[in-house]
Image 1 (spheres, rainbow, N blue to C red):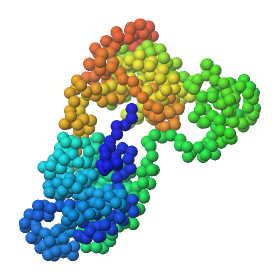
Image 2 (image 1 turned 90 degrees about the horizontal axis):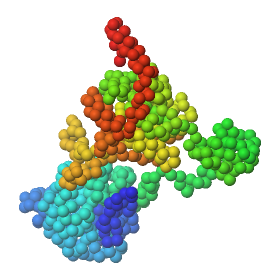
Image 3 (image 1 turned 90 degrees about the vertical axis):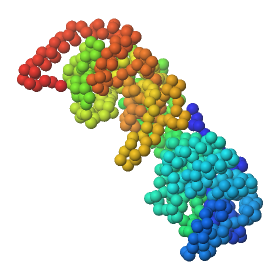
Image 4 (image 1 turned 180 degrees about the vertical axis):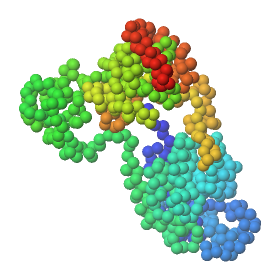
Length: 628
């Protein structure tokens, strides 16, 4: 299923989000020094640098600040007046100036907008029909102001400096009441800000939290490196302050890019975007010449006559001309028949090979492997503990036998007693390397040990011993999917209907939802739930395990297991699980008619073995050495 598009039209004819180029805003702000002529120079320079939009800052000074703030003395090097009010009034462009600059930007072909710092400014920007409102970080926490702006249903670019996640969520839900056309920008309100305080990972947090909103970045750092990293992380809007001269009077100039830096930023952003490419790993057309030059192919060992059956003994892999069967197709050739002579060291070409009906890409055995070690972190002796009359390990063996789809069924264990049980129930016993049976060992360690000792196995089903309600029909279906070369791994899943939250830690006292939106909490009966591994089985091609080090790689899919009843499955890890499993296993046995497999297994050989084990246990108890 194609990924949902997260985009909207920010400016006429210009969408942001999804696969659209990053929208680059040149924030002129008040770096125009209160001069319309300088403002025009900056608009032209931003256009020449390749920016998509120029943005100014609009406020009604007498509305925005109170009397004491306006009358405060402002005797600093950056001041344009004796008081703070005089300073702000000097830098504030008139409404006529805005109309003049807007017309000039339109003439040059660059979008024009502004931040609004008060209600009158919002109304003015709406009147002159700017394509979007910019919400400055200082006003993002003013919910009344946000709602006033959102009600106008004009696209919004919302900076989040000086805010926390709770506030941003409130803004999200508030704006959503009126429209969907808005974006959040990660921002740190310091001028300039050091890279250690830019917190670009918030971009990913926003992407995970606000899945239907494009996310961007507003930067106040020096240079362009951090901004490029933001784009690489997925920022779809990038805002940077710009200036004609960093030495000019004003606090923003030092945190701004000059026009040569803006030009380089735009250039590098487009390079970064091009380099991101697509998420699918595949051989590209540009690699084809090198593939022909360096790629290896199957070649003949010795002169091979027409009718020769190919095997690993008469083929080799070399850099060859012309190119033929590639290394990953080597196993496919085993068992194929030559339809013409192939000379020593020559490439085996497709037109020289015939695959008979018996020949398959899958050459070797497809086996079931039950991992059942002696030790257990949760329940001592768990794998031999009696469940519904049989040792726990027996139920996985019986399910594999009932599936009737495996060439062989193996139990990999470090315990001879478990091995004897396995053989009595119709499986074969592999004594695993003790190092793969430690508490710290992984199932992958045990599987690598097994396939390393069984080179004739091309595919395996890792069947979980602690999952006694294995579905034989599902096992058979998964095997057929692997055999048909549709997938490299098929595993079993169930569904979870639990609402999950992040853990509370010493560093973070707040929690947040992981898999749902609290404002849109679904009813459990209406929610399909989350797909989760239930650990019942993992089918895989051995080649994938050996090549990738993982049995869930390349072409992976799952099958959903509902058990003997809707959702009635059990994975045994605690003593309480055995109690719950008793009834389920009984129903499971009846559902899949396993009785016909149990009778022969509980014959004389099994009874004798259990008697011997009981005698051994009694003898050990006399000397105080109870076996585990």
